[in-house]
Image 1 (cartoon, protein in one colour):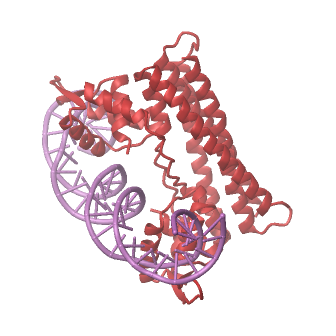
Image 2: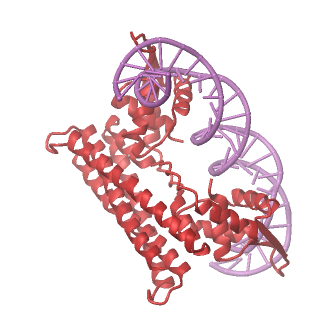
Image 3: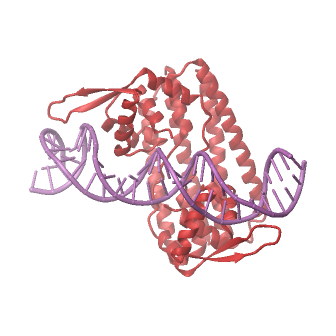
Length: 181
Length: 181
DNA sequence: TTACCCATGTAAGCGGTTACATGATTTG
DNA sequence: CAAATCATGTAACCGCTTACATGGGTAA
């Protein structure tokens, strides 16, 4: 598991509420770790009970109260301990690849439907790539004067960008292959 | 869920036992879907109960008996129905990216340890790439005369190859970034 | 007035991991 | 003689998803 650690990193970069964390997991952090708000709230409560984070009740006018979380010393220690552990090999779950190989056992109508799906999927990834590139322009316009944290965030973002480019090129390959069947 | 469907595709490509499926999930299918043998046996039993697959008891001399599974008509229908469903957006879980961003909150010793980890991780992916390329040479030496199923298997394999190349290039970028901190 | 944003939860269930178990045969 | 291969499972646990719930404020 690493949701706890992803939360620790995010809170170290910037303290915030469960709701704010959920939004980050839909945006920047979501590039490499997804989580629903339910799961985030649950883990935050456990981390608070374990003393990894501390919460500050903040009353707001015109808006519901929120609990702003910050990382405590034990949480920081837990993070550094985890950083020193070996990286677990990722578990791969690529549904589209299964469907492409499955298309061999479907008829022409099924393959036509798959082509539409791949095109929609491709459009989604093109949108994602554009969002990443816009974020890069916004957050890292001048690559000269960045601190360590920013440089690390940037290299992770570059990974996302290169991943999306690779996916788009592959999907073109897939579409050609499906058309040529 | 799609483990059932990954199993259906694999059994349509070639009938086999739970043990053989587990080995395939460690090799070719494992490129896009991972599963342990325990999970595979469990799902196979359920699929058999649902009439998706049929099992044939095969006694072997010098080896334990095995149950050879084949896809039945209802299983094939379930697969084509699933193929027509929209592709679910993948849930991303990239532990290494979390660790890289986390390195901003660790000391020099921690960053040195992370560099070692990234190098080990890089070596693993280089091995994987070489295995993919060897498999491509072996299974698709002549791209001219391939049937539909082979061409689809090949395009999925090409995706794996391009993914590994992208990862290797990015890891070099990561290593440079970590060294320059 | 419909719908979305802010903000935080509970409850049920399931897919999947981890640990453990068995036992014969072949290979180093 | 130990280790790996072949072959199939059970049991406990848990991370995570899905569905449901609440309630005020704000924009179209």
